[in-house]
Figure 1 (cartoon, rainbow, N blue to C red):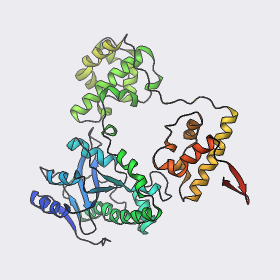
Figure 2 (figure 1 turned 90 degrees about the vertical axis):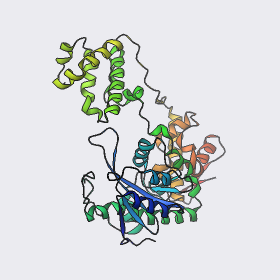
Figure 3 (figure 1 turned 180 degrees about the horizontal axis):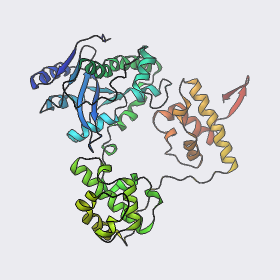
Figure 4 (figure 1 turned 135 degrees about the vertical axis):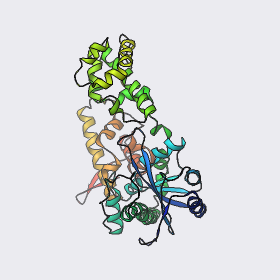
Length: 385
């Protein structure tokens, strides 16, 4: 177990980075975290990298280093497991930097589900529950682009991997004792799917707030403008809201201005936007008007359940709660009512019958629906036959 008072290496030169990476090459796993900002950019700006093993901890300054290649070689080494907590945003950073993703990974937030923790349990909460340590939150909103970093900032950042080392080791022991560690592999592999981190402009319209209320030409225009805005935001590396806010985009789509003068009369648009991008906006409005809009993706709107089907779901919810109690799991992470409704309606792809959830309760639910499993009452408690 690492001593929390272990010396923190601050690495801001190529030679220091090479030496530290040499010490990591023989590691089976490393704890990893990042500090970043994205308030003024489209892509997250990497400001600090924290890495730790059971023997060492380092804060690596990417703002001072021209080349992170030695570190990326470690992160993309298939023989070294990268341990993170809620690692999706960290993974997005590496995907943006290198066009590929670290693998294999172990996410302690996902692993904690197997031990009865709720979904999306925070790092600080997990540290407190597992280690009895209250983490300092003083620098939660720090500007990590500013230099020099203070000793307190470095300690705050390093704590995110110092205790992650201990959390990882404890969770692994507990999961191994329960025979559950390998059940998480599918969930971890899902984090390395590049589709999670791509934002194709053609799909940007699906995330526009209020866009689902538009129809016809207004929807076609919104789809075209959302794609244009997303592409421009990526090119300029600026938040898309700085280019054109969602509410303004919706107003343009509804009014469909045919000229710069008409565009300028739409409330809430800045003179700078009209001056710099007005012609392009009007051109896209003209091109999209009259085109058939893209259909909204089928999100699986459920058919209305019959009274008998609703009763089945009620019983299945009881079965889920029973499984949670028997396996020391939060029932909410096993299945939601909506997932059970999908299952009753014949959806065999429902999350509750996939991956590790299938092992815990999914197979029982399928057996129940097939008439091969029955529930009874014994000593005042629900029991499975």
